Amino acid sequence: MLFRSDAYAEGMSHLIHAARYNADIKYFVHNNQVFALTVGQPTPTTEIGFKDKTTPQGVKIYPLNPIKLMLASGAGFVARVFADSKQIEYVFKEALKYKGFAFIEVLQPCLIFHPDVSYRNKIYSLDKVGHDKSNFGQAWKRAQEFDYNIVKKIPLGIFYQVQKPIFEEQFPQLMNLKKKKIGWKNVRR
Image (tube, rainbow, N blue to C red; front, side):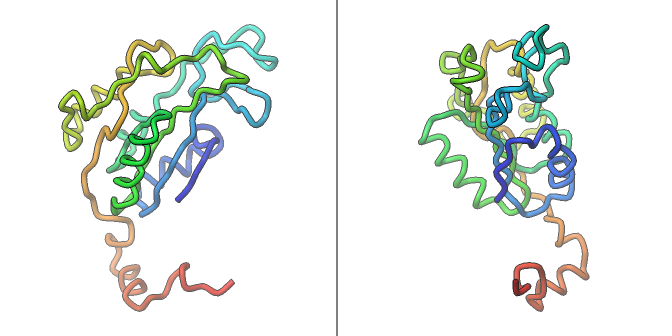
């Protein structure tokens, strides 16, 4: 499992290629739209107009949409959750059971450096609206509802879940090493 806060900045290439290759890892991103550990600078998902000490005239670049990015990168499991323990538990368990690359974005507003962000009254559960998580077109449409800039409604839950061959299953030589139990997990440190 990976927990990243810089996934959409310096971690972007790792994120995209892990999804493309369908590496059997779980990638949890805690997104509060600012770099809170380094005094609240904007991130690639910060909305236009956000001001801080490094951008006193406000952010001018449109935020990227991580859910759309993961869908476009070929991720087979794409989800978003908010600070609701039941939903987080359910989605995390589903991700951990999933064989392949699982991407989960955790929306976590920063009360110190980004206190004016309020999601609570705008969120809704995909499970409660009959969303078909195996339908890429539906997932793409739902992903466009929240663009991290204008907040009208925010879908939460599993956007997309389909099984695909994982990275090592696509290469016989890697499968042979796996059968012989030779790999990074068996390396002594």
